[in-house]
Length: 121
Image 1: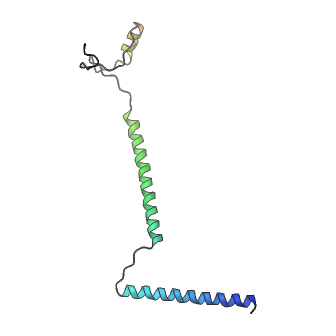
Image 2 (image 1 turned 45 degrees about the vertical axis):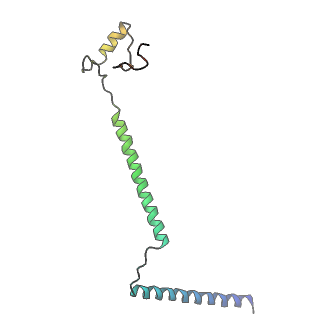
Image 3 (image 1 turned 60 degrees about the horizontal axis):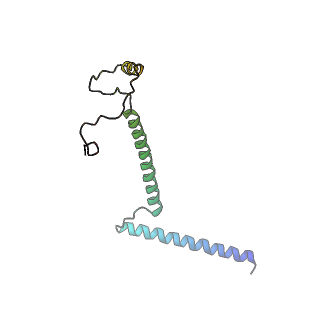
């Protein structure tokens, strides 16, 4: 038998078997649905749904990160230091006066109570 003729017969057999398999599956599915079977999503559809969910959560995470960055930017703003004397900001005039007098500012917090380190021995 020539090679071309053998290939033609093999291809025809393959196509007829593939068609028979497809029709058998199609009728089996229709019969099962008729008798009440319910088929869930195929694995490919499940994978696409998972991917869509991940992409949606990724976008939500990006929005949350943007919102957190915006809140952090709003949190830091210039406020006058609160001293015990006055809650009115002097626009730096008091700082300049002390600077010109040679008094260095102390930025350390004031300790309100004695700790173990500062207690006399």
